[in-house]
Image (cartoon, rainbow over all chains, first blue to last red; front, side):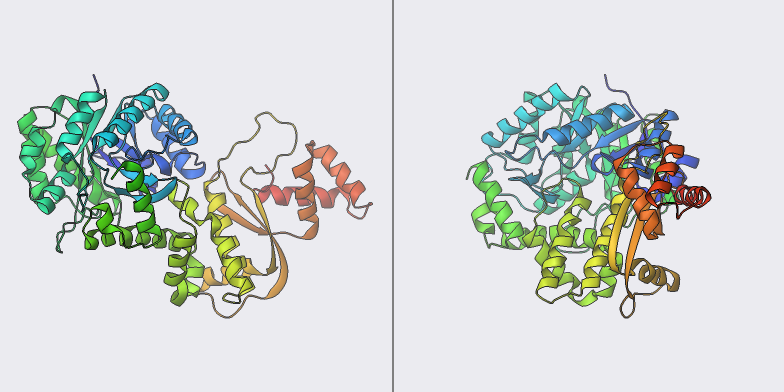
Length: 274
Length: 238
């Protein structure tokens, strides 16, 4: 049973000083794994202090590239394992995507090819991961702007199969579901209903840019109203308190603004479960 | 299309701008979006790592980042590691006369500043010998790059003109208390002392003795002690 942590925010460099002084309405932090793996200096000092204060930290990576046929990188795994054990993360996560292929990094999240072959590779990788890192793993659904005509499964079918064939948990990004639903014209609620809620260990909420032809998942703005509504609906629908994180990676605001977003998430949880 | 073909085509399309969106089964405009996103991350990471050079050479900067992106697709998962070949890239530009030698030195300065900022800090506990700061980097420049940068920082505006041509030895080490890099221009004797400390482990007393021998008595014990104290003050020696 994975514990409920409450509401968290991403631990970002501009907020290091503030979070050590007073983390306010925030119950836990999410670390972008690659920003702390192998780093000394200030980043290491900050997580050491938070760990000493018993503040929960979860590691969220970008580099596993589950969807590529490249082998898992042993050096990467060793550094990731060190970090996870150092902060004693209750779980760790990465994206259901290709972040590299043929050993070249994209530094972006590209959609996986949704075929049987690809599914088998990801299942194997998740199983290998469990042998190396003895902490629960969750994969996150990404936002995407293109779907290959070579896919033989929908995103939902692919996720369902992955959950069936592995012991993995899911980090459900509600904003990504909303963005994809708007861009590709499917029903976000139907999608969410079809995900087994007992496997959802964490939720991501973030902002997006709805000013152009395509909605872009920017992680650079406040959580918009429709995403808050969908979040509330999902909690009511599942009847389950799920650890929730406010993601804000670009145009990072001052800590008070971020804290207000965390407070809003907390108010919704309190309202739903009062 | 199998996964192997899909991946190969993605790399070709993203980094080598092959028009293969349709082969991948993607609409052209959407694939172009990803290409722009990825190049944007690349450019922004380079700009953050080379704030002064990107300011100094605003006009070719976008072009350079595009060329670099194609010539050196990143192999490391850490975004900031993508800059590690930038010095080599600029050296090639220098060889064909596209950049000045001091700009190549500025790249070395900015890259090292970042590396020192993030380097792990591990010291030998209970060691009786003098220890160099594990984050220490020593650079040798043909120009006074630190003086030029200092002027830029002090004036709060972009670097003007050229740096003074003057052989400069620079130590960069991170202060473990503030976690910020400390920059120290090194006199030749201090440089020699650092080089000695890199090769031998000695207690402070033995080190002073051996430096005095090395200097053939020109430096007094007090002079050497003062130099060591200064290296400690600058966090070069712990």
